[in-house]
Length: 560
Image (cartoon, rainbow, N blue to C red; front, side, top):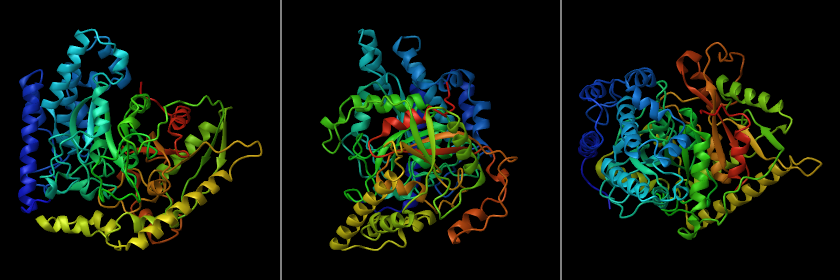
């Protein structure tokens, strides 16, 4: 079922509903003083009256945020999340006060970046009351490792009573009657779901624009995108307006937003934590399956979240999951490969500098062996994904947009225009090719085993050819989508920011192909990417998610 109203009318309904949730939030979680609301309303907004109006955002939203957001709020939201949880568990901070201040942060962040689709104040208040009662009754806090955790969720993740539209207003009547299992588990462990975050039309672009919310901008530089498709989740986490945001990833949609917003993000191994009840594009297809994972400003928080979800034995709820406990391996030495480019598109200078600085740091550690790794099979992966992402040739996406007159965005056209409808035998054939490629890639990985039988533990490399991309330029996904073809877990780790003095364009470089030429052409000056975060991806073999955290701790600049 899809609604057949005009998409512009539906967009106006969504915008009105957004403001209704803003007002309800302020009613149930009021500001400390009346002036703060007006300060919020006077902020330079990243959205206008309709979805085609992208407002007049501040050039550097996070600077305005830090200037205008009340200091009491900042004291709470900038506290490392695991410490925040501990203080709530001990009663040193009240859950209601923490959630109230996170809501205030979200209200400001949403005005400045358009990162939040809607707020969930009534749901949050119900959960806060449950947690307060548990605490008053002397509950064992060890059973609630996420006690009071302010949680944001990507708009396409099902919540009971809400419509996961994945960026297309035609799905506004698709009201789900259940909570996604990962949300259910998170709340059972004490988390408080506070908002639904913006995502791109169709979920198939590394940017964050739709006719259901408008355009989400990067908190650090509004001329840049926040990544996608979980762009709202990345921006919300980057603004510290959620302690954890849940995204989904079928081509880079957790890793891209994490990298673009200077936070951690895990693309978990398929089958590790629940995701089968998400509303992905091509829902029901088993060829390339979306996975989930946390997006957060804290490495400790990302690990605690994963450990807590896995400890809840989610495989007893979802039979597609593997019954593998979270157990960090007792490993003293690591062999880490480094790759700077995939042979197709050369990353921009800030990305190369970030990789080299991490490599230099690890090479000085006595328990790390650094290995030069050559990427393998990128073109094969691209060909496989070109057939298996849209097995219907994009017909379903086009038909649903046509029902409301919704234009398909340029960034989505890049994903679907070359898609070809496959017959059943063709689908089988391309899935066989996918499986064969996975075996060949594993053989390539294992070829780096040394004479002592020590295997490669991880590969560190780019997440994307650029830092946060300029709007409507994110054409090349292969640095992330390769690992979707292979189903390899990747942890994104922020490592710095663009430095105009160090990150000058390489004018001597000769592009390898047209796509490479395009990417080199959009890096004319580091000044255009001012304040943009730099990140690397740490990729491991399947079901080695835990090990990625051990390796990240060796070089991460953890925010305490």
